[in-house]
Image 1: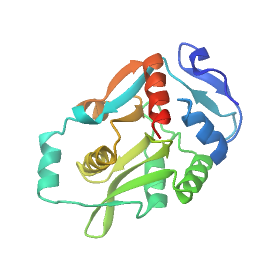
Image 2: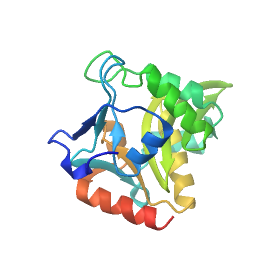
Image 3: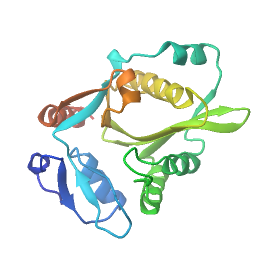
Length: 209
């Protein structure tokens, strides 16, 4: 269905077109490929970048401010309580390069369907019964790929990330696919590794499932 991920261009672009059906998305993620839509009016773009962002869970760095929020139980953290609201909130966060979001309506529909199938996960931070932060990602063949985060209160999304990392570690995961290392994820120890190394890690993880 997809070309060899190693055939991507220098920017990581591998393919154009196709759809966001659950079957296509599973095929993509299990090969280390992810969609990054630009607009509803143009074909889908699929990426496998030459350097892949990864967060190794045993090397997780937790900022002091985040530790304080966790220790004081400042937020109530839940899993999968309101996936729809989390992804819609993430969609309102613009890309750094412009004022648009890559989480177009088709993405919301597709990943909500994955959530119904148990293949997409959300983590929510609540305060006074109000959703103040969260994140979501997909889980295929034992590999969690983070997609997006948002926060309305300081440290809310970071507390969600720490909670998720601890939960995944308990379940036998050793790393998270973060795709790209943002300044926030760099704080937590996110790093880039060569695509070849990432694909080898992906293959080994699948073989152990």
